[in-house]
Image 1 (cartoon, rainbow, N blue to C red):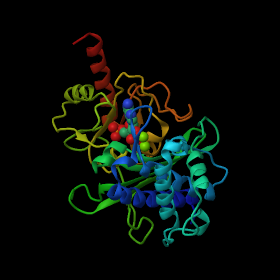
Image 2 (tube, rainbow, N blue to C red):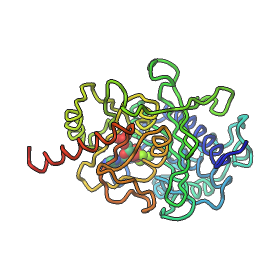
Image 3 (cartoon, rainbow, N blue to C red):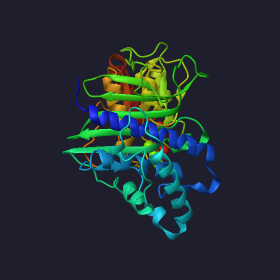
Image 4 (cartoon, rainbow, N blue to C red):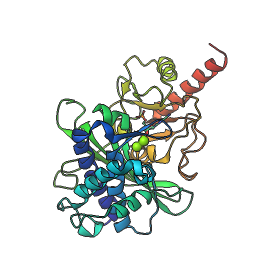
Length: 355
Ligand SMILES: Nc1ncnc2c1ncn2[C@@H]1O[C@H](COP(=O)(O)O)[C@@H](O)[C@H]1OP(=O)(O)O
Ligand SMILES: [Mg+2]
Ligand SMILES: [Mg+2]
Ligand SMILES: [Mg+2]
């Protein structure tokens, strides 16, 4: 039986799986001069560029009319000073694109065949330059979410979502370093999380995502994990962790927060491993990007949870490349979510009173 967005789900899972294989192999081979610092001071590696070239090539072949809002662009690779990096990106992207077809893959997605030229791959990266918007179909891609975690050998994620008329319909998150079973942190690693609106949230094994093993359906307990704790950033510059601490106190949370890079936090939440995703702005004016929350948001909702900004407003994926005015993000099981909003309100009032 075919269901809505079947073809999109298959291509997205295949693209994310290939990008996970690519980025984990890049991590093992990464050399010091293969990381750049972007204008916003964040790092970008040959892994980010080549994964975006790979995923955009597959999307471009499978859905040629769909625009893509991707994090990276090719400007640094086109600059004469970026020639060595560009050559590495071309080699890595082609290695990933030409790898033999798996049982769940099709040659018409642009894989398993000929290598592409540097120009074709740079153009594929720049397919991600779409400005976003309120109407029609678009994909949004973060080829490596949590680049700092990636560079530390910790958590990162390949994140892809399909947005239709500003609503996220499909989200796929690949987490190469996430344990398959949270109860066995030393056990097998590598999972893909998939959510299609109206069809639930599932965890698949990265090694064989569409193979015989049935996908694991995910559900967030309405009252959160027991004991409750917060899922938050590792990087102090990304979220106001002191505020999280106060919110946890107000909620009576005694368990230490789980600090994890990337949208792997949404995946942990979706499988009931940790209770509350809380990300409050640091006050620097940074605007959250749609690719950092689109797949996570549909995953949380399809697992039965609620996701809003810190005032309880829905996240708006129709404003362009960013979520616009940044009031943070809160995601949790239904009951606990409303308690968290109350605790945030109280913590903000205390702040305003200078306590
Ligand atoms: N100043 C900032 N404030 C908030 N998020 C940021 C900032 N700079 C980069 N990011 C993005 O935050 C996300 C990671 O957040 P977390 O701390 O939850 O892991 C990433 O998408 C990262 O980009 P990138 O995709 O380039 O790694
Ligand atoms: Mg980045
Ligand atoms: Mg990101
Ligand atoms: Mg990124």
